[in-house]
Image (cartoon, rainbow, N blue to C red; front, side, top):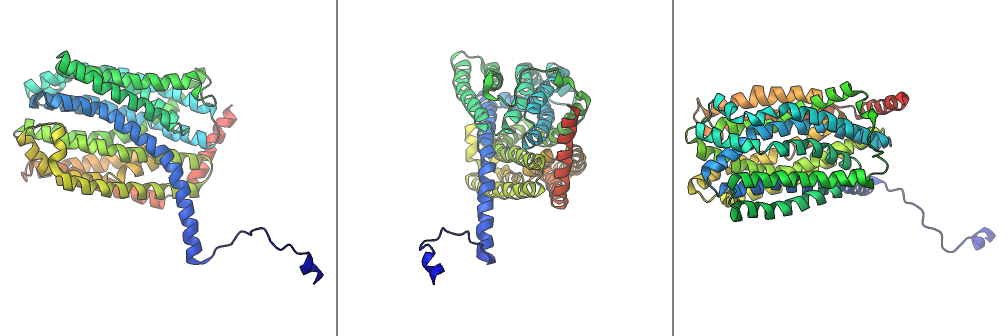
Length: 482
């Protein structure tokens, strides 16, 4: 009785040990919410940045499209055959930074992020210089592969003006991944948004007021890309990243060959993906009424590409989250991050699938007023919708590969599924079976579907605890080398 009398009337709340289905559901929901917040910290700004950067080219295409069908086709070919191919390779090489910087940040080896950034700049600028002749000899390349002389001439003139963008990409892509791996994504979003706003105004002045036509539109895009580079560069070297940027260092040249091998594997992996649907535009140039077919397809691909900035945002975020968790030694955390990212991306993909099916060819009015082109876009809208739905999964799985360092393996998967299945199947449907551009596109969708299934299998079967050990060993190796 005396013990009861001395007992306090109000006891502090004790943590409840929730059991049963309801308790497990609440814990799962809480874990999902925490991971979603971490994911959207990266996804939100990454999507905004990518939409803004892609918007720079969309604005240029929209202005050029209203100059004429030939001008639109020439811009589409120039942006696809040379700029698109080279961008894909540089993008892939820069993705090595997502693996290395993400794992270094997760392991709290902050100094190495700045070293990796400088190493990536050196490698990408060297490769950018090596690829520059493809812009200069664009007209000859197009004539060599059988494109029409008029289209080749105009596309060749336009491609020379794309060279400044080419080197801007070599600087910007490493900067963006360096900042994303540290969750400084708002910097990338703000700089890209400001550049897009400036681009709209400058393009309008150069094209409509000063009458520079297609050259004015491309030159405005060059300026806008370098504006983004300048903004992010000043932020990094001006003190925005005190832990990870310690100034320029000769360490950037250490382990150079190993870095080139990983960057090259990354370049092959992602450029094969990036080139895949660009090959579709090139093949369409050989069909009858190629100008109309290329115009319609390029509009569909632009819409698809703009929406793809959302899955690409998830690709970047998944790569960072998986790399962070592996660098911290948490295989379970990496696995859970993958589940949350894929689920969220698929839900968004279903929404856009419905929107494309509902609005059909109305979105194409932004790029053209030609009734013939609009009718062709209407015929391709179902394929566009299903491409968008499939792409809500595939880039996220590529992000898993980037975060885990599987780039070389996935490069072989991409070669087999895209170029040994998708392209041949598309060519058979397009020509012998006479399905035209719709047949080519359908075959290539089949290649993407096979690649997605293989990546899903690799992800499900992976021993993530073992992957975490490998990442930890990589970080330890660096520490011992110091």
